[in-house]
Amino acid sequence: MKILYTGWYGFHNAGDDAFVYITDWQLKKRFPESDIYCLSPQQYGHGVQSVFLSKKMSFKAYLLSLIWYLPRMDILVFSGGTLFKGYYSSSFHYALILTLCRWFRVRIMAIGVSVGPFPSKGEQGKWASFFKHFSFIGLRDNRSYMLTDEMGLSSKYLGFDIACLLPKYFKEEKIVLPALDNNTIGISLCSFAKDSFQMGLEQCLLAFFKRGKRCEIIKLFVFKGGESGDKKISEEFAAELYKYGYKCEVIDYETPFSVIQNMCMCNLIISTRLHAGIFAYSFNVPFLMFEYEGKCTDFLNEIEKADKCRIKNLSTEDLEKAYENLWSEKETLKRLDEMVDVVEQSFIALKESVYGG
Image 1 (cartoon, one colour):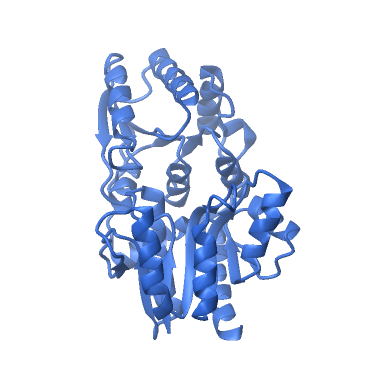
Image 2: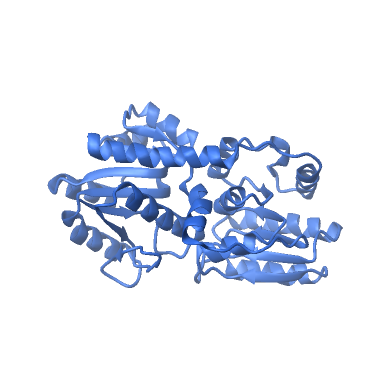
């Protein structure tokens, strides 16, 4: 059997790249006799076999790669992240994928994905017609599950973000984690957040760090590499923090592993990016998160993070309260092993769908 998995891969993004390693590892574990391929121009290492018709990611190359590789496959798996949202008509490649899969009898599945939001009930109906061709769809949040329930999909499964399997992957791959440095705080800024939000966020953070000496070192994490990534805004913010006596390090993006190794040195992560929070949660690093969009809220709800420790508003007062609450009261979050079991069960359910359907 030949399995091709794909997602928002090839853009040097820590969260999306983590999906590749976890998906590859889990599919090989569940289907040891199968050939597993990743549709991405990026070469990942660690045994990942990437296939693509170009060395650079482009929509045209992606479509040509699908046309070339899909007829040779038995199963197509969409894995990880926010892949299905907005207007179906503006995502015409999904219609192409569906046509190819029907022509060549390739089964379509998904694992660890979000569904929605959709701009109207009419658009939701169009997406529902697409999803009805899936043999299995594993979802990462309750909101997506409720939407697919409205769509009448019976092949759905409620899981969690598959990146929470990273600690088990680290252990298997013997990736070493450094020791904690109590004088270090980590920050993740988000390059695709709206300018107004970004400005308010930076003002809030600067005022917070100006009020008192919070630590000696601040690490600013680049979660999205490249020209359109987080590096520029992180460097500019670091320059502002220098003025208040902080030693700053911009951790440029290389791999999810290097990001996590640096995060584990921090005694606190202040996050805007979803996967900065998920990485911190998975590796037991205390964190605070600005809820800049719905998927952050979904994640925080899923792990039962107390409302008082969220940062709902871009105000220094809210950040200060969340910071004080984090240290004064121990939060009771869902245990990671519970969430790991949920994700592993979703991969088991996918396997059962392959062999039982």
